[in-house]
Image 1 (spheres, rainbow, N blue to C red):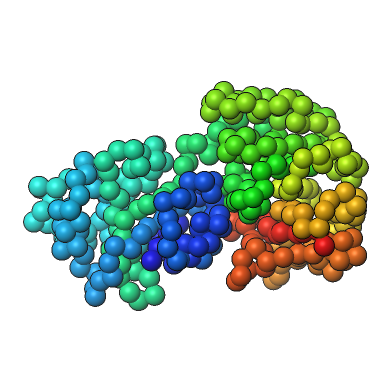
Image 2: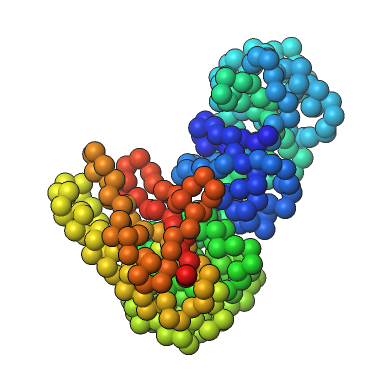
Amino acid sequence: MYFYDAVGDTKQFDIESYNLGYTDLDYKEDFKLISSKTLITPKPASVRCVYKVITELNNSDFKSELLKYIKKNSFKKYFVNSNLLSKKEILTQLYDVKNSIKFHFDADVNTFLLSKRGFFKQKVAVLALLRFDRKFYFCELIDADNVSQLEMFDYKKPYRKQRQGMMPPKLALFMLNLIGKDKKFVYDPFCGTGTTLMLALKNGLSFKGSDISEDNIPGSLENLEYISQKFDVDYDSNSVFHKDALKISDNDLLGVDCICSEGFLGKPKAGNEELIELVRESDNLADFYLDFLENLSSKVKSGFPIIMTFPVYKTEKRLIFMDALYNYLSEVGFKQVKLHPKHQSYLYSRDDQRVLRQVVKIVKV
């Protein structure tokens, strides 16, 4: 059994989904070490962790299991974390052994993970007592956000735009994982500052990118050069070009076997918009994306997948989905498919956002 923990928001998850890439923790190729059955709900947070259950406990007393674990392993440091006990309560349990074994605690875990992701390379164990569904589990950490690396694809990249290029790299990773392991050539027709392209480059995928804004072409290339130098990977400077997404040609799609992109999400929202105004904007964007898909329809084969984010506008009382798009998908030769047996799509959001992102998969009929 495995748990996904986002700053104390603990969820049991499905390892099969994890292997398929239904997580933004990292790129799918890093998941070879996990191979049992196990739903992950991606949720933005500072540091996300995946814990493997060592044993189920009858209560919150985990001292004996901890000492048993330490006896079997030889780590330089032991970090102890919990979504149930405070640092003081943990120390009380470990009072008679705390002088012989150096323990670090919750704040240290986050600092450690944020600074290095070093527990894979160093002799370090990150252990936790987690309570889930009225049960107690003694666990060890097996995966976590590579925060320092993700920063390179976000605010550390040389070319950024406040109104563009705001796609979170964690979301882009999540979407790249959804394209399928057999897909090796990605096209982003709304590439903006190149976040998806940068992550494709780093993870060994072939790619093309285009944008209607001419300024974004040299900017995306500058960001690709930055990643190329950081990770010692090569790219084709002709892979990014100026293009209106409504006028994509057969030639633009040569070699491409999938599209992964975040298009235009609409104008920035102040929070005081009338409901009718938001519905009208959602419908107008639906018309735009239907035109985009209609142009593609005659140029791609049956089964061609598209992973995209579409805007969902949030009011105090409701969420406004782009229903006009989904209602007419079949008329332009596409259909929506489930991203997971239990989920038609995923919503990516933070509590203070007025525009949510709906991650969907669309395929050519």
